[in-house]
Length: 305
Ligand SMILES: Nc1ncnc2c1ncn2[C@@H]1O[C@H](COP(=O)(O)OP(=O)(O)OP(=O)(O)O)[C@@H](O)[C@H]1O
Picture 1: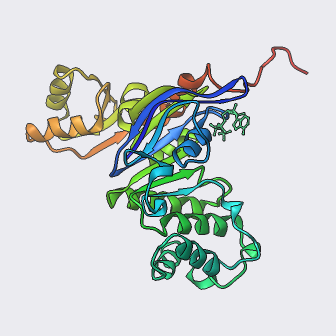
Picture 2 (picture 1 turned 60 degrees about the vertical axis):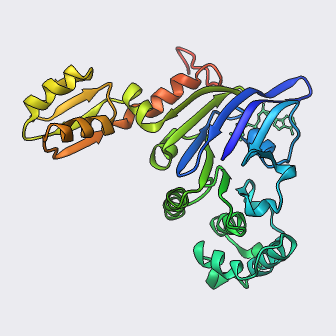
């Protein structure tokens, strides 16, 4: 469990995080989104005791990081994958981490296996690709088998295979009951990985919502196919959804989440052949939500050269 309460952090006269409050619960992946400079890294650093807030609190399992006993067994984090000393091997790095944090050495081969580095564990980290370093950073985060995981831009610089692997891992960790907070400035990435979104801009909370809610509110609706489309259309409309019939016989449903559509059909014994959210509008929704808080905006001048 992560709790951020009225968190404020200033650098000189600049306010990086401004009375920010949100909670992140277990069992799902929570995406932490915001434009460059929104305050995501600062918030994560506060959660990990790496910077002291001016006021408010950043808590893991109800406590500030500094008062956690054996913190690596409570919270694991990937902030900067290049932080490992290049002269070390992955094996030595993890063994040292385990030793200094009271973690059983048996966890070392287990996490190396989990992140796919078992075969290269005796190589020096200096020779690792960016993707391998990310995996090593994730192995370190998982070493203490913590219930809370915090990842800052974990897919940065990864190839499609690496990105797919990280997505799967995040989802597996959440499915296993862990609390997973994952930052990105890309909505497209979050749409595929996260269940819930905490969106900030200029250090303030902009939205705390589920991907499904955001899709229902800003997406282009849900495509529904059913052999009893007419009947279903009537029921959906009665329940408050916007319904239009596509030329092919499918329904285009707006203002209602996929789960509710499914429940309503099930309660009335209506078979569904397809229920597909058309989420293409999410990126635009995010741009709209954060439009006023982006640090740098491209200025488009008419009549350019
Ligand atoms: N050590 C620091 N000293 C001074 N200002 C800082 C420091 N760290 C962050 N800031 C400022 O605080 C604000 C929030 O930065 P932060 O790195 O938390 O944002 P972010 O959302 O993680 O951005 P990005 O997506 O670019 O990583 C920015 O305006 C940044 O310039």
